[in-house]
Amino acid sequence: MKIGITCYPTYGGSGVIATELGKELALRGHEVHFISYALPFRLSQYIENIFFHEVETSSYPLFEFPLYSLALTSKMVEVARYENLDLLHVHYAIPHATSAFLAMEILKEEKELKIVTTLHGTDITLVGLEPSFLPLVKFSIEKSHGVTAVSRFLKEKTLTNYSIEKEIEVIPNFVDTKLFSPGPNNEFGRRIAPNGEKVLVHTSNFRPVKRVSDTIRIFEKIHKEIPSKLLLVGDGPDRSECERLCREIGICDSVKFLGKQEALVDILNASDIFLIPSQSESFGLAALEAMACGLPVISSSVGGLPELVKHNECGFIAEIGDIDRMAKYVLDLLTNEKKYELFSANARKRAVEKFDTSKVVPHYEKFYESIL
Ligand code: GMT
Image 1 (tube, rainbow, N blue to C red):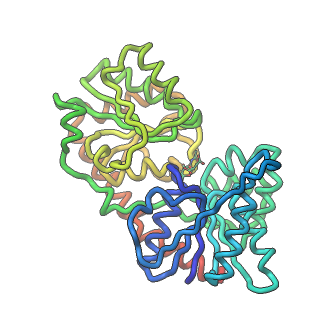
Image 2: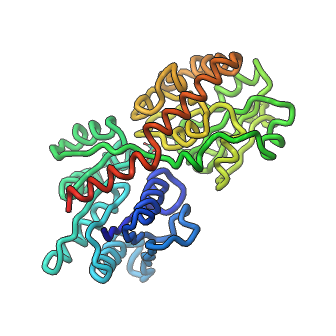
């Protein structure tokens, strides 16, 4: 198949999934054309069958706001027409599904361009619900030929919040469990925890929805009980406030703000427990990557997280904001070696058996075939 993929190319789960999907589809012999404003960040190596088409926005003085959605539409039309795409797969509804609909309309006299939209999270649960977007999101979802959601939770939310009756296929996120796999303690780990301290880790875009301050408060409790370190990976609007909180509590020496990092596997392999106490999380790809590396996950019980983290098996879930309980769960695992080893093995097993790339990507292929 000749498939166009549009996604946000910077750090973020939807861009990661779109890019890894494109890479795997190319390896399976499909021709994949990425259409976005920058090269997706996990597409750093040349792969046969993968092409990148950059969307350029004009900075004409009359346009006070960049008209990205329209420039994207024109690029979609151009690529679909000249590369003879069978299908356009857009990740994150806003504005990609709308641009794709417009492209389809423009092309309809000359070819039938099929559109698949994958819903990822805040496009449905947060920003999509704003009055300035809601009618457009509903319309664009209804007009897509196929719609997928990354969890059962997100599917239900879409159907109820937007009063949509359309079929939505649940295709979960996935991870390359050969790449994300448990490894021995590494140089990074020895530097972070030179005296064998336990290491907690959290990765996110530091937006309010991630409740990174809860992660810090949980760590504060752990740190009082056992020698430990906290690694915070990523960057975003809440980072400064989180740094301030660490100074206020007096735990700066034990908390490392690593910023955006490429060497995630090394960081996860130097860690013991993954924390994700989010306010809302449609799937939790970061938690899946950690599980693949054998890290038990302590999470809030929101969104798609309970579909991923089997409670009392590969981690624990607790009510949003229940810092005491989450800290108790962490301590339970870190002070009981046998239990920790069991949970670690369970986490890895679940990632490999249910969410490995080889298990999930064929679902997308079948879905495309059914649409075409
Ligand atoms: O919706 C977002 O916050 C952005 C989006 C992204 O691009 O990272 O994240 C969502 O999609 C990921 C990939 O499907 C999911 O793993 C995340 O759970 C989801 N984020 C939220 O629902 C907050």
